[in-house]
Length: 264
Image 1 (cartoon, rainbow, N blue to C red):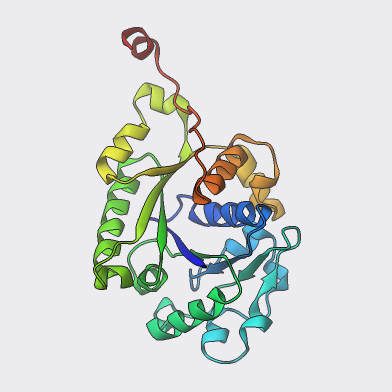
Image 2 (tube, rainbow, N blue to C red; image 1 turned 180 degrees about the vertical axis):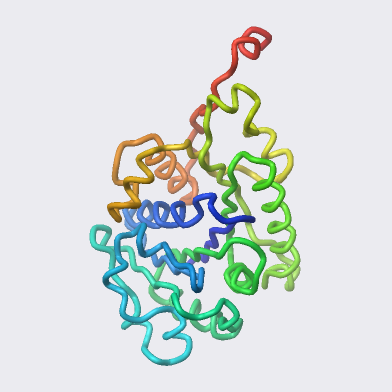
């Protein structure tokens, strides 16, 4: 049975689209049929991370408004042949999305795919609500900073109140991805550690991703970092395995300062 996974965040710039692209590739590499849908209407960048920006002819709004069919709009990934991509419109407003049309789109995608990944716009605008409304699972991407964690806490509350599952007395399964961890700043106490983040958000952890310069070069070349052997690539592969229900130990990305090691 297909699973709808929304990748979301409380604020922009935390690496949400990068997470979406790499997890999508990771699941496709495991033999799953995957579609990544960009719901960030007007501000799309998932296409660039996947290296598919030049192949876009139609977008998700074209599909929902009947200007093309779903097959015409779906773009097959260059390397991961089990992965397909449905781009966001770059010229429309987020408010153009309609809840019933989104539901119909997702129901159509469920017929052909094992995993439907929705790249949600950051924040709590209407585009965000449409991306989380039909979710079976949500991956909340945060950076280890107070502002990011605070905003994500609000997003979690909205999901618990406004999702379709919430309206039917159920709960969207939610996990936390802590992204762009800088061990040296954690050791100095200048960045929140994992326990701090999890204590505030009170949700289970599914991924720890270190700050990695390879992510920038991967984005510029349009080839997700998961294809490399960099530290973040290992993290995304581990997240993929956990989504599939496998138990994978978490990497220790937090260096301890001298006194922390001494007193431990």
